[in-house]
Length: 359
Ligand code: SF4
Image (cartoon, rainbow, N blue to C red; front, top):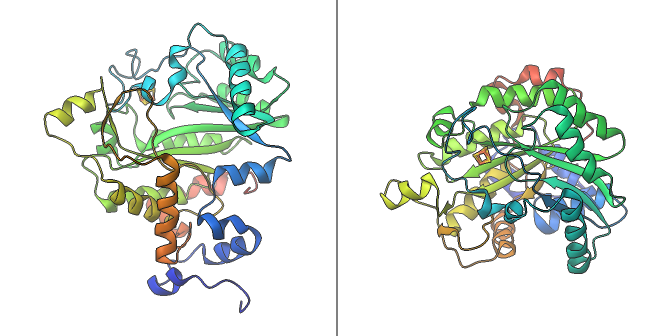
């Protein structure tokens, strides 16, 4: 082991077990870990494809069972899709046209050559299998689409739907993105998610029997959660055997239930430096082979009420890298897979899974 890189945080903090060997091996094989200190999705895409690939966000016209009364009304307390998914207003544009527009934009902006169709807005498995097939295949029909990524709720995926999505894995790069936000049921109730952690674990369990890659969304800074609560979510995510995460900071947007709570003085948002530290804490706890698709929430238009950070996404991401550097640390430095599996009673999930090889 003499030739392997020295990782101060492992020595300083003591080993929690699990990922030390993986980090040392990753640092040798993946130079970008030295540069970024985490595994960015852009680097993941470079590993997967010989050409530049970019995601195109799409709105297929679905709604959400947590809004139309099937599961709940009003939706998650923080949710206003127009704030994080600007294409919501493009309901009159077909999927084919949205793809044409997205391709032209990303080709010009960053020289992307191929694309992943990202069904982003609302709940993109909320329809019967035939309707879903026709939406997904309208996107896949484009010759430059090499993959598909489907954002949804964990209570909205039947086995038939998973089997349809799995059928695309033979030819395409396929992801499903599940909103989890927190493993704590009390928090999920407080933010009106309309599902509990057990339902999420069930969706993960069933998805892992397929070849679909799994990305999990988490929010840091949810009101009522302590740092320990958030780190319990990190430990749990670390043990799921998934392939990607998206981290968001809690923000308050106009026209949401959260905004009402905010103006009544019931909740606070994080300052940027506190978020940077929490995001670094989270990354230290998840394995280095989980790709990080997002490190900060995003708002469009004039929806944002709080926090106002006056820093770009790139600056916040650089701040997280700097914080890991300051600690002499990396993604996975404090990962303890054994602990997280036991805590969340998901050992069966891991044991029974037909995992894709880590990227
Ligand atoms: S599940 Fe998604 S689309 Fe539905 S209310 Fe919650 S955040 Fe909004």
